[in-house]
Length: 374
Image (cartoon, rainbow, N blue to C red; front, side):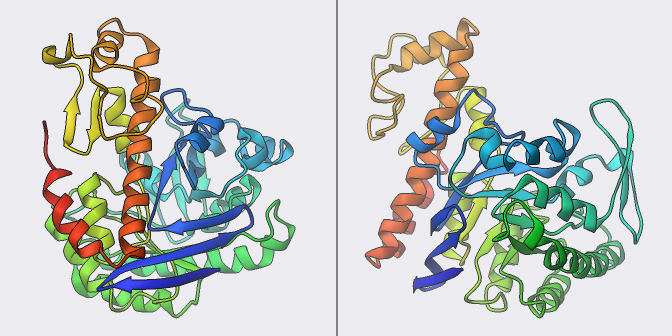
């Protein structure tokens, strides 16, 4: 159940109640692709850095260890010892990334495993069944994510097929959810249409009529410019259901998130903060810092002197840099912990600004700073 508490222009402050707790929005979901955060963070670590929602990947978990094993061990919540809400994606984006190894038809998608090459055929119903066995609180419809730019006629046909797949996903969800490991699971639909305004609008109107618990904007951050992405969000904002949560999939940088909140988005996820952290690119309230730079070799300051994360409270820039240069695994763990804490802290500050009807000023102040490279 989603409650829209207040709005400031297009920005929205809300909360979503799930079987595993209440989520305050806007929110960034920390990505644990294979039921683990890359960089060595545990579920306890996620609690300590204020993660509200963990996101896992249907495609990867289907390949290993398999959804049947996960279900036998208590679903993802029991398997990874995470008591808060979980969202699983449908596997559609991973199929998109396997473009050279896939064949799409009306029934579903045939593709080859990136692990051992064995062939898999996945229908919309299969994606839903896998997610129900994983036991997530929020599951995503199976869709096709197309690259930007793609030919108009192909995107149109793909979008229409995604609508038909959504109907099949909804039917499977309704028929199976009561026997699922998590009977309170919600299905969210995904808007597609590339960068074509008319296709985006038509598709959003079509899927809104299905009256699903939530809606996502997919197929962005896959080749288009930031301005094109913001334009798509702008044109969808007036026609997306007001009292349903809105999720911008796979986005993005801190400034991308700030701009999307400004345009009416509630949920976000991205591998970027953890991936960048593993390469020494750390987010701060002064901009993004490359901790591997020589200038930090003797710097006793914390990564961000305005940060309250467990890393900044103990360790220096010099130490983190040394760990990277020495190729110690601890470098990745501490850096990922810092970046995810920063993202979760950013969302908390956004919510505080909205609660006080001061988001406009917050947005104006931080949009340039958060995009800066130190």
